[in-house]
Amino acid sequence: MLDEIIDHDEWNYTVKKTPKAPKIRYPEIHGLLEFDGVRNPSARSATSHRISMTFRTEANDWKPKVGMCESAAEFAVALEVLTSPETYDLRFQSHSVKFVDELGRNRTYTHVLLVTGRTGFRRLIFVRNEESLSKPKTWREIRAIVAATPRRIADDMIVVSACAYRKTTSRQRSKHGQPSPQLMFDCRRPFSGRPAPDVCSPFSRSIPK
Image (spheres, rainbow, N blue to C red):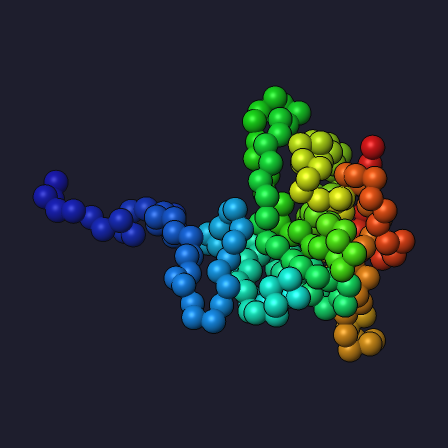
């Protein structure tokens, strides 16, 4: 037997496992407000597009601020919210809540988008793909998240279908040259007794009881 070391690629034909890349952490950038989310979603992924952006809202005196999205769908929804004249503020990864799933396991979920309207109405937006939303298990999890969310955080929460959203906004952009501003206030599951605007769009679903 030859006394030699055989290179990994000569005997193992599977893809060599490499160490997981660390999350992207931005240093302080002159002129930009820092990302203030409770969770950094910028870890590398082979299945979703992690996107960082800068944006401005009236709440921050129109100063540019760093925002982070865990998927292209979340990024598209965030852009839609920012085009609405009714938007006063937008926060990314704003709050984490703990809940118990149907198997009795302790879980943590971080709300990805929190939008505040000019009326002061605060709305959480839950973004998920159509395949996941077609499963009853997902809706049971959503109801558990709603139940675990303190009423002080927001006035309601809507669920956005990423697939339907992309199709609808794509048609609207092609037809009108700009997105619809109606996403922000939609069919809702209220957390409090505060009234929400009576505007509905086809992008979202109300949360089943």
